[in-house]
Image (cartoon, rainbow, N blue to C red; front, side, top):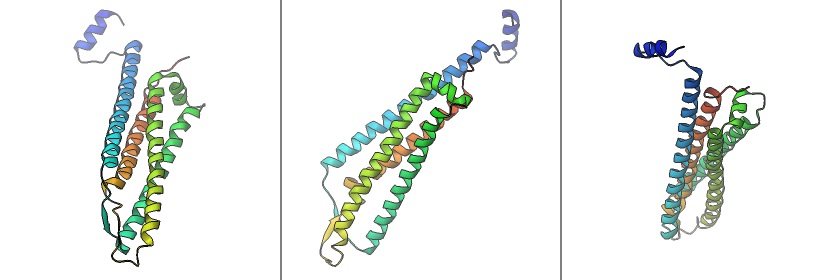
Length: 199
């Protein structure tokens, strides 16, 4: 297509169909996805460090332990376990995209720097979510085992499991998981629909 016809097409509201322009468009959106992925992870990392710093400086809160609190705590443990399983599945999906050698999306992924950046960002977010989940579960199980022994002592008070000193780990877990989900989605969309066909 010569320059005169191209100018006429663009003046009429048409799109530039040149292969070079389409390639530039795909590359531009891929890098936008990569920058967004890094921005999401950086923001969550800073927020997590801030929560950890604030929680480590604060004092434990104490409440009266009863059967209702025990039931609520068991539900929280189950929720944390479910979030861990979701993060594990997404982690497997993200890595599966790399090793799916027969798929064109995987070929584009292995050849594209934006997808590598998104892959690393998503992996770090999901691995962080799983690590925080393990730390949270260990902390809750230890506190729960101590609290159960106090059930027959009505005057005893236990650490508030839902206070900021303990609960920040659960908050970090699901925020990291959501970040990992978003980055995994961006990675898949970039590798699947914005791939550059190469010989």
